[in-house]
Length: 98
Image 1 (cartoon, rainbow, N blue to C red):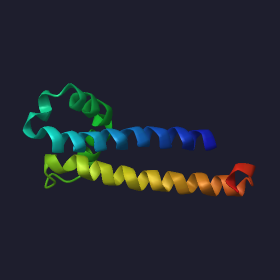
Image 2 (tube, rainbow, N blue to C red):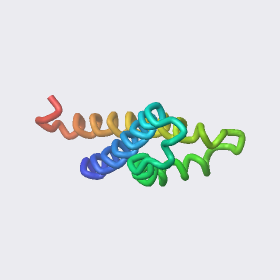
Image 3 (tube, rainbow, N blue to C red):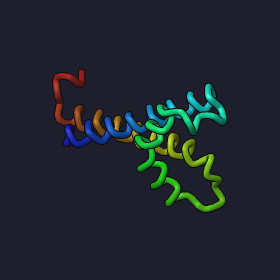
Image 4 (spheres, helix red, strand yellow):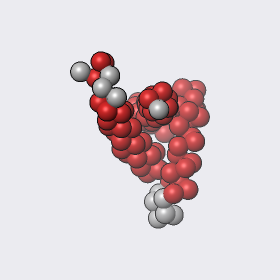
């Protein structure tokens, strides 16, 4: 179970970093970010999560806000997974938890 939580946490962490990278490139490149190779790569990495959030959110949410909503939801899920890892570790009385 601990390995599964570690894998989930790693996948979420990678998606969070991709979304942060997109935000940084948005600030640096502005409107020219669409032609940036690194921005495209970060979009590909985070696309499964943004598509899922776009499907969940109502249509009133503008498409430009979906990455921000995705980031916030992933941050909440990351925190939940982290707390579950801590609880599992403490319940098993593992030496690394102390």
